[in-house]
Length: 259
Length: 157
Image 1: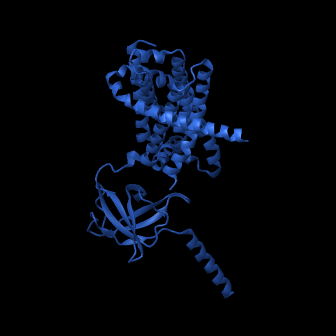
Image 2: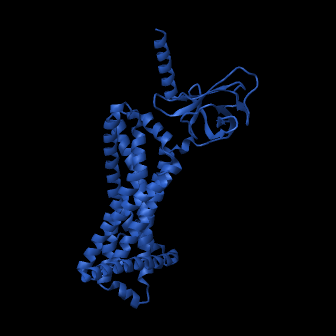
Image 3: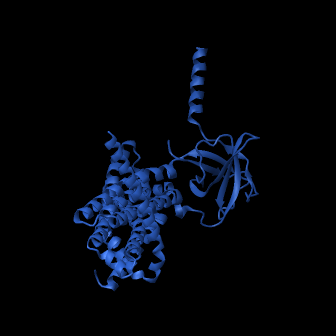
């Protein structure tokens, strides 16, 4: 019994220690940002691998999510003779929720896992220690550009997802199911607010981008430097990122739309 | 990794695409296009009951949108709702005895303010007040009135 309580305590302490390490790590990464101004090439290379290479999955998913919403929304709304509101339904659900959340989940799977695995492997093959030997700070050189690239990419990807999704809903609703073209857009423009809906969606995606990339680079950096440790870090990245995104989404939604 | 120039080009295109998507969301999807483009002037109107009218609801004349509701206040001395209406400056020829009514778009739709021009020579200016108003229709009141009349009819028989 005593042993069990002791283990519980050990687990708690190690979790808190990890949280502390993550926060100190974040501070160091932030301190590395000014150095990036002198070497924008590093950032561009990471924007390529984190942002551009995620474009495909984001565009395709956004298109299909929008199309499914168009189809489902139409089937529900047509019973009430309210299929003209399809544009509002699609736009609000995508801009407020699905755009930021689905993008963040896909981003965690596509870019977050890659970041964690890459950094973890760098650690396992002692490339990070090698940099330290050469008096190059690996956090400034390796982590900071990756973190900043993720933080920049995520809101852009979410915006692309939302725009593509709304056009996907437009394609299904207007072109295939015969909702009126003008009603789709005009009802949407009447009900979607620039600040309440779109800006809050962008804020959500900024928060998610921050958290997902933070988890990814920290898990990679904190990984046990063995092949098993790297694989665990990659798994944890996706799982924790998904938890964090969904939990934060509830909190943010309650704060933004809860009045 | 690809050559440096290709990478930079693709990253540039990615960022441009992201910003373009934001732009599309702002212009095409949201109400930005209906935001106060051009000057407006403010007139007020007092209603007994405004129903579900909200700030930024439409103000129309003959079905044409000429402005929007800018503010809603309550005058606790006269027990009336005070609604501020922002009308676009290009529509500056409304007679002073224009009347305002709150209607509902469709059976369950949004409520809006409809203006009905009168016949006066003088026109509404910034700060004017619309004197003739008609409150929103409250469904419960209507139903209870109807039931009440039915009941009193029954008494006579």
